[in-house]
Image 1: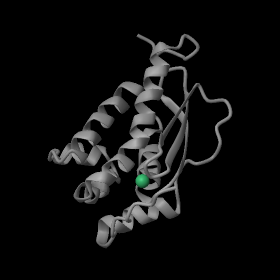
Image 2: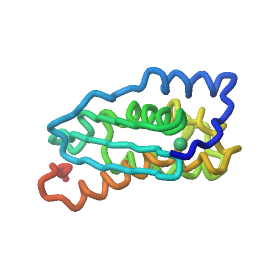
Image 3: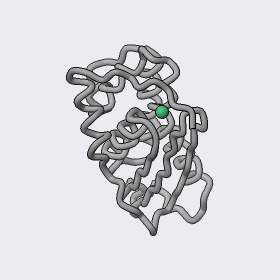
Length: 160
Ligand code: ZN
C-alpha cells in the first residue's frame, strides 16, 4: 500500500487529533444496525465502515465507526461518531455540509464551529491538499448511510 507523508501534528490541534487517533470513540460492533456503509480510498489505504442504529424518532441511537489507515481518517471518523449520537439524519447532513465547507477553506461562524465539536482541529489538514480526502472519507460514508436510510423502507422514519 503506498504511504503518504504524514501531516506533522503539533500544538493544540495536533493533540486533539492524536487523542482521537489513539483512543477512537464508538468503535464497538453494532450487529443490529439499521444502516451500514463502507468507503475505501485505495490511494492511501484508508477505509471506514459505519453502522447506525436509529430510534423510533429517527434519531441516531447508536453508532459504530470502524476505520483503518492514517491518523487523519481515524481521527475524523472518531470525531464524527462522537458528534452523531442523539442527532437526526437531517441535522447530520447539515453538519456534513459545514464540515466539507470548512475543509474547503471557508471560514465558519463561531456557532458553526461549536456545532462541529472537536472537528475544527482538522483544519490543520487543509495545508496538505492530498490529505483532505482522508478527513472527508468518514463523511462520505455518513452521507451514503443517510441516503440508504432515506431510500430504505426497513428504516424507521421520523414521525411527522
Ligand atoms: Zn489517509
